[in-house]
Length: 248
Ligand code: SAH
Image (cartoon, rainbow, N blue to C red; front, side, top):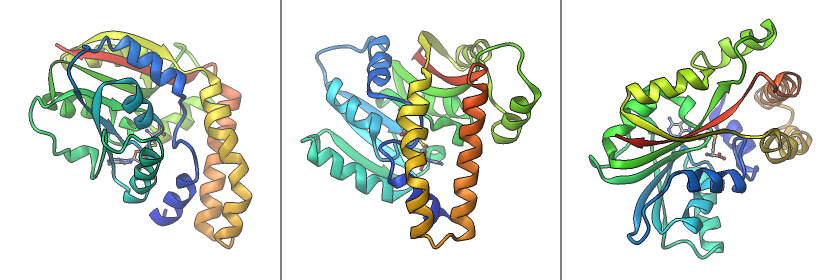
């Protein structure tokens, strides 16, 4: 898949993955962050910054928003300016697999719908040294919600992301990696349908037109339609679990 086409497609969305302001705030409240000092927060795989803006507004912090695609960061910078948050939001273009943060320099590592790009276990393990002791990790991650599920959805996810697992398994990975769970909840389906797939669906036609119905553009639309169809049919079996944990 050609990156430019993919980035152009996701760039238009308010957010690049399921989520909402309300649930970012809920995760912040579960993080029990210290008051008083200015915290150092990194929002990893930030996209165009849906969660970054909430973090910068809700926490007394400097937020470094990290993404591999500079085009997303450009939009993010503009959003921060419009909201008068440019002094508290910095952007950094680079890979989540080689973050430049110093050892024990971060109070909070945030990642909504992004850690799957390097895998949950690798992410929580490799990022941990950059957190201060007592610092908080907050990530949303695809999670099985039941112990059994139809073969169709099992196969779909086996192909998409083999690390999908139950919350029990995710929480034990966190605890083995040296974190203590502070909170967990599942994003409701409105975070997927109203906030993510709904607006995306409206962009399909204009996107295909703008890209002259290229093979890449058609493939991207088909893949997203399939992903949405799976979610509509099988959302009782999986969702985004939001894990809030403290470095212990
Ligand atoms: N957190 C945002 C975006 C989620 S989509 C939101 O909730 O809206 C996942 C994001 O991870 C995309 O913006 C993508 O560009 C970014 N990404 C993918 N691979 C990455 C990598 N290796 N390093 C950093 N960012 C990456």
